[in-house]
Image (cartoon, rainbow, N blue to C red; front, side):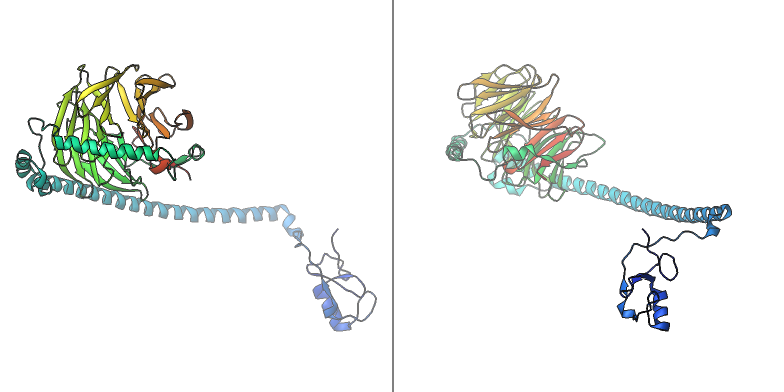
Length: 503
């Protein structure tokens, strides 16, 4: 029900009520009446302006004047609105054109800057390589044998000696002492769960936190391998089809170093757990050791005659195990770039992968004819075989507890082996056609990650699937856990590095 002014009989814009008569008035009319007469116009009783009570009402929309309801008036109103819209549209088009020009100019500047940076980076890399071939590597001269020292004098990088140096009693004693310490530490850690370890419930809530597609060249797409720094999981090392290895900091989202030197794709990489040192391998038959800080090579190990297919760093941080399609495995010193021993496979099969046991005295290798072999490093002999897969072995990983070995091949399954009983105690059968390219346990041995057709995390002992990621648009080639399984990283043929964790 609308209010009505007792004086004008119209809806008031600013209604007030008289406490004397209770009538409603338009404020400006009643104030003028009181100023002239001093009484209420309804009952004639004395009334002042201060006595008026204001009424709060919604704003009143007045109807258009009669002239605006005619057809010509409506047409004129529509024409005015059309003109206003056209003027506004013209202004927006001008602003859009200006923004496009500014964006085009900015993109041109960015492209030019990228080209200059790329050219300068290439020149710096070329200069470093030239310097490495001219300047003696004095840092290793003190510990080099005469043959290696002479090679370093000539070429700056320790070249491969003609014959293996052999495992000396001092090296064997070093390996044994390290294994004794690691065994004791593992038994002590095995009694309690590591502090800060991610729970199964947390892993179930993991999401994709970041995707980085620009670590390797787009002209030869594909990241083939990766490793994560054991102490600082923000540092990630990747190797790609572009013959380069890249060190990336996921926290700052910056490339720390680009390691160039291989003449073919980089298929295996290792990040030293205690130093800024990277080790890479390639089908060019070389193993290269890098100083990440200076992005320079410190050693080239030529231990094989064929493509290098597997790398594993010994727990001492001094030696590297490698396998090759030349049907042999090799044990080399990364400090001086020297082969210590090279042993052919007992069955003469090409080797596809390698992994040290956590204690470092035994290790496993995979072959193209589906065999998993366990070797004694000190005796350089094959001590156990695990048959059961079909197809070349693609990856293997020892659990931190020292008892379990996980293996994968081109048969769409993952097998778990008990090293104490030397038998297969669990087979995880995957979907038909599923390809497993890499697998790894976390540092506590609580979780197992698989990379291939997708990326999966399993809870060990129960072997329950905790999480599956399908973010990659091509095969996932590598996967690694961060510290305490608080994060997970994977790389793929789609040229991306993806980081998973809790938001």
